[in-house]
Image 1 (cartoon, rainbow over the protein chains, first blue to last red):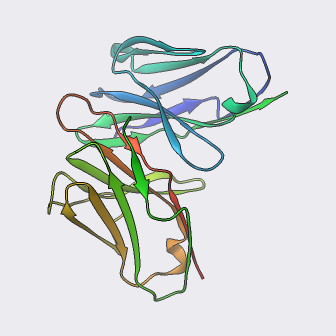
Image 2: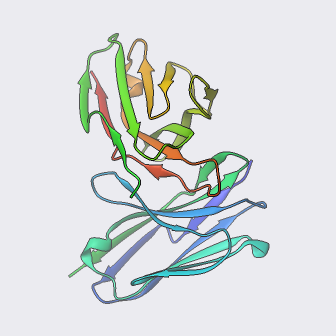
Length: 107
Length: 113
């Protein structure tokens, strides 16, 4: 089956710093989503991004499907950005989740 | 905004009890999903439903069943709860029309003692 790997597994930042999270996938996929799981466990949709680049405030994402990777950029990080970031790709109808990047932002 | 709600945020049940986890979505989505999330194992698909009265097994269906009698509601049933079913349970929904985007509920943290 499709393998989805994320890096780095852990990231510690000071407030105000920028970061890039990477998602690699092993096979062709239909689509891709990025999620933020907050400390209470809720998965919040960040981007639905099968290809190209999207921006939403301080966050942006780029997917290069032909090269099988996606990047999530967080600029001017805030403590509320803390949590786990997942990418997930579609294989036919199923969503396959990556291993996650745990982000901690300190004031 | 899409809204997916789950009946409980926290639930404590005893071994052998029958447990119902309810999920409701308000966007008229055809597809609904149940996942469990465990440390070190990530999110795993238990069951999904393409439409009313339809269900498909996911990757780990053993010990679970589901019910979809109405389009907006998808129930996960633990027929006889066991301690290894202690987990975080997440429900999601998706329109089958144009976008594959899945929307998740807040999760139910179930403890079986």
